[in-house]
Length: 469
Image 1 (cartoon, rainbow, N blue to C red):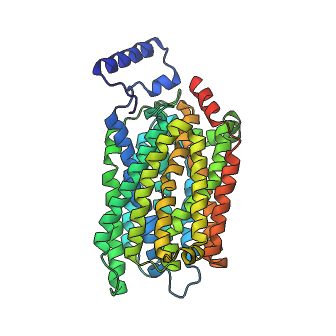
Image 2: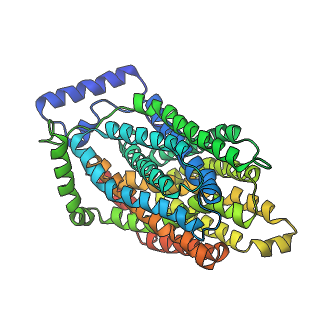
Image 3: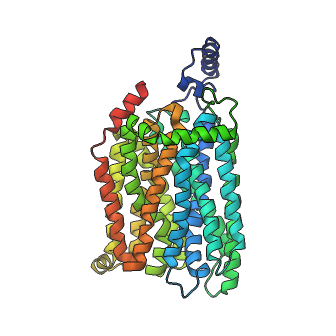
């Protein structure tokens, strides 16, 4: 499936040739990154396990459990800033990650230590998630601080993990491997959500103090789940990158200074990789819509459709399963039709799904189905686009990123993704201003505009050109 070198003899011959070239001083930049040899299936699976691990954070903390708990129990009952407070938490963490992503990517490329930075960001996210144990009713700003740190660390770890993709895959299987990772991630979300639901139990008729205590314990469990599930990645994925010439013994201060200098050359980098950066602009816009869906669907379901925790659990079970199937299924389609067509198909998919929710009352009257049942049905169909959109977008960056600057390019991927998140939090402020139902039209606009921006890009041609360099 992964087009790997399958025999030990082939592997020894490959490594021997690398050593001979290295001794003669003939190893190219891309070859230096691959001196360890092509990835085996176990290493690819270990890399994909990071998607399994980090989905625990975004599923439990950002999407399904903690967001609704924050609005109901941490923000004061009489506050008029419920959705807006959550938007502030998301926005502050996003700004921090946005500033750090390209710079951190440049430092990674210069130092050749992608795995070390992946480890640091993973541990930081896990610890600050567990520290949510200590916040309770009224601790709004303490919670915002911990969400800022944990979510920024999560986003940086996602960027560092993505930068390994060009090392592990080729043009032919990159979309499939990315899709497998993203699909596995949704099973990680399911597993972590199931573990947390055991801790939370039924909340109907339970005193608020007990509900708070259960949620606090659930955050410790989520941090532990993330760290433990990430161990295969941290232990078995090999660091193929090497320090840039002249930075073999550079101090951290020297790396920081050089990283800042590289970051200042963003305009030049954008001119050298026009197709990639035009894609990232389109990605930023449609990710605003997708990110708003992920960040606010739990709040929407609870407040607009009167979902109980059991209903939310059922909804996320549906979303996770459909998203996993979509990530893998669209990954296969991408190998046949190309990344651009796959992304465009998922955007159309999303527009139809959001419009279905916007017109849910009319659909309910026309079909005789209840609003909850319709929402579950729409979630099943539209949810398959969650993983597919993100996985296909990650594959595009992998195809267009030069090997020796992979971490930096994935840093820009993180940068534009965070800009999309900042655009997406407009949904929270607009919801408080005009209502959540009318604010859904903003999401439709994000998906439509992003698709229009993507249409003229010649991604396949640019990917072929990059492969030939």
